Each structure stands twice: as structure tokens, then as C-alpha cells.
Length: 338
Ligand code: SAM
Ligand code: DTB
Ligand code: SF4
Image (cartoon, rainbow, N blue to C red; front, side, top):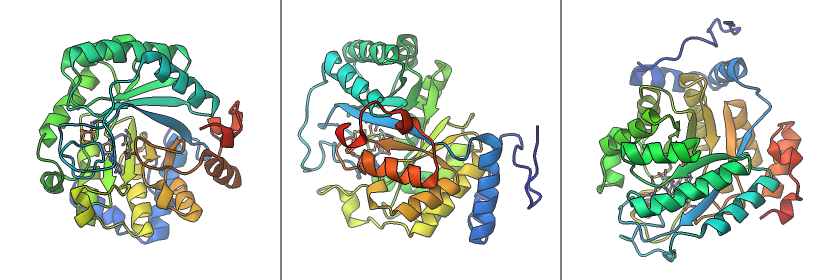
């Protein structure tokens, strides 16, 4: 069924993979009300506008990473406060996943600070994935670059989503990371997709990039062979000791809403996650992002190494907005959930 919004724009038009920068800019520069109206129309045509997905993150292997991502607390290239740890035990991961489920998470994402997993580590991650899946959670992993056989093994173990971000525009990419190329990332996304995994792919804003870079990133994502099922938009969470400190520039809140709206319009069926950086956002800004089409958040006091809003505060905000989520049927009170 195709519907037409009051602005005459079809809201369930076929998915496009040929977006130009000029088109993205034209959307971005619409008068704010027109842009948000159009994004909300697209959102309503594809999703319940009053529901958000709740994902929970766990760093299963922290720090000591050989990559030089200039925003990251876990890179071994920089002197940050993060201490490197070994890969967690499966039992501890599963216990954390169970708590996350009870606290209202629908998806559990396991993250490791690797350039790529070694096959012996992947055996253990596959065990974790199977056990977390058995709890009835959606599973996601983010482990760095994957070969096609590694992606297939993860899929066979029960992995639903693979998170691997493009991070920024092709033009700005080299200013942020030198140890792996954007093409490396695109190759990993292809391996994951070919193995039947759903893709979670987005990036970061607030590192000193221009609006054109943010739009360039959205065009890159929308023009992938298939749209990522999940698109995380991270606002850079400040980390001491990394190079991005020298360039960081938090976007104007209205610019962030505009970006979310453009993401919603260009990738109408993708879940857009308001990811890192919600700790800096007011309730009003988050509410505007939800109206503009964001429909997923990370819950829990910490992301990987940085802070996230308290679950109790999230539950209260969603309640005030009349937004449903799995937080509504959490088994444990939000303040005790962490
Ligand atoms: N090591 C794996 C990789 O990079 O593919 C997985 C984990 S990595 C932490 C996942 C993503 O988190 C990065 O690609 C980046 O987009 C985001 N991220 C990392 N540090 C961040 C920060 N300080 N603020 C916001 N987002 C961040
Ligand atoms: C994503 O795009 N955001 C998450 C998840 N994928 C792995 C990570 C955010 C990390 C924020 C910085 C930290 O806590 O270290
Ligand atoms: Fe390593 Fe991932 Fe951090 Fe880059 S973002 S330094 S790959 S943990």
C-alpha cells in the first residue's frame, strides 16, 4: 500500500540506492517544519511511531586495540584511562545478557576491541552468541573486520546483526583512522551480508566534521547495496587523551535533528538508533529526534567505556512521550537494573 503525505510526497516509495549529495542537502535545508513533517510521514508509513527499540551493549573485550580510530578510548595508540582486559568468560556474558533482558533490552550487542577476531576467539564468541540467543534476545556483535567464513560461523551460531560502522564521510575518514580503509569496512559489511547477517552500520558526529560530511556519510549508507537494517548515529562521547579532542565540535541540536530526519527519509525502513552521546542531550532534543524518525536507543548506565543516561531517566522520558518499549515490561525496576 502506498500512502501520500499532505506535502504530496509518497511515504512508501521504493527504497533508493542512488541518492546524490545534492538531494541529501536539499532535504537537509528544507524549512525545519517541512523536513520533520516529511520525516514523520515516512516514519509512520514504515513503523509504529510510538515505539522505540532498546538495545544493550557489553564490552566483552576492552582496550588494547591495534587500530588508531582517533575518537576511541580503546585504541592502544593513545594514552586513555581505559585498561585493557581479556575476553570475558561466556558465563559472565550470559549473566549480563540475562540482566539486560530483565531490565528491558530487546537486543544484546557484544563488542570487542579487535582489528579482527582470531579464529580461536571466534569459537568463544560463537558460544556466547548461541547462549544469548537462547535467552530470547536478538543478538548483535561488533568484533572488527570479518572474513566471509567468520561471518558464516557467527550466523550459524545464531547471530542476528553485525555492527560495523563506516564512521564518517569518505572525505573525512582519513582524518580519523589510518589503520584500516573505508573499503576494508565495506568488504566486511559485504561478508556479513552475504552470510545472511543483518547489518547495523552508522557512524559518529561531533568530531569536527562539516555538515557535508554528515550528509556524505548518510549518502554512503543509503547507497550501499542494501540499507543497513539498523543505523546507529553516535554523538562523539568525550574521551580524554585521543586526537579527536583537538577537533571535536558538538553539533547544534537542530542540526542533529535535521540529520536524523534526513536519515529517516533516505533509509525509510531502517531502524535509526540515537546511540552514543545521549548523555549530552536534553529530553526535548531526544523527543525531537524521535519525532524526526529515531526509533532505537541503547539502555544501561554505560555504553562500552563511556556514560549513557540512567535507565530510570530513559523510562521516564519514554513514558512522558507515550512511547512504548520493552522497558514497559522490564522485570526489575529501572534503578536496580544496572
Ligand atoms: N572494534 C570494533 C570496531 O570498531 O568495528 C567494534 C567496537 S567500536 C567501539 C564500535 C563503534 O563505536 C565505532 O565504530 C564508533 O562508531 C563508535 N564509537 C567508538 N568510540 C566512540 C565514542 N567515543 N563516541 C561515540 N561513538 C564511538
Ligand atoms: C555503535 O555504533 N555505537 C556503540 C556500538 N555501535 C558498539 C558503541 C558506542 C561506544 C561509545 C564509546 C564508549 O563507550 O567507549
Ligand atoms: Fe579498536 Fe573499534 Fe576502538 Fe577502532 S573503534 S580503536 S577498532 S575498538
